[in-house]
Image 1 (cartoon, rainbow, N blue to C red):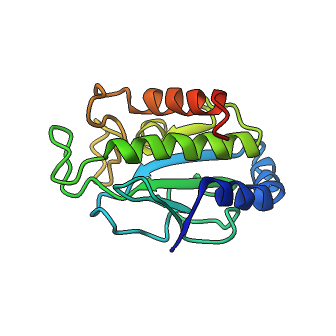
Image 2 (cartoon, rainbow, N blue to C red):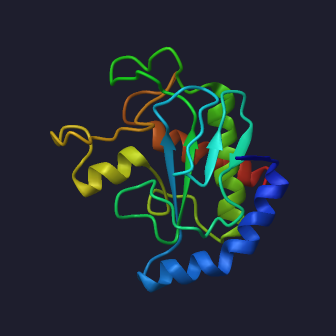
Length: 182
């Protein structure tokens, strides 16, 4: 894992842009950003995600090529970037556990989305920027599915109502983009 600034992340996205778009267009769709948590500890990063964000908001990449296909979201990895918060150890739908998403992580994730969306020419909407929970609901392994591999990443987080996590993250990302963070 390599710690990066938003400026460095922007450069990585520029380098991967054509390849990401080529992959996505081979599937007749736009590039996608998928938002996760690791269900692990603060400071515990996973190479399944292109980008890992620690409890203090610091950003790490697991690759120097954001077009690498990583296995972060079932059947949705080609032409997509996986972004994960290092948190949510022992979380359940009633309690986010002893290591919940921090304010710094949420803000950093929104800034990362803003930067990537700007560089990759993406609208920040649910079609292109989706939580793992939102993708899982569409693909039949979300909450209420009974699937033993149920995913509900970012369905909610501290201060945000259940079901609103994706909307809040996209709203923050759009705000940061409009402020010129990207």
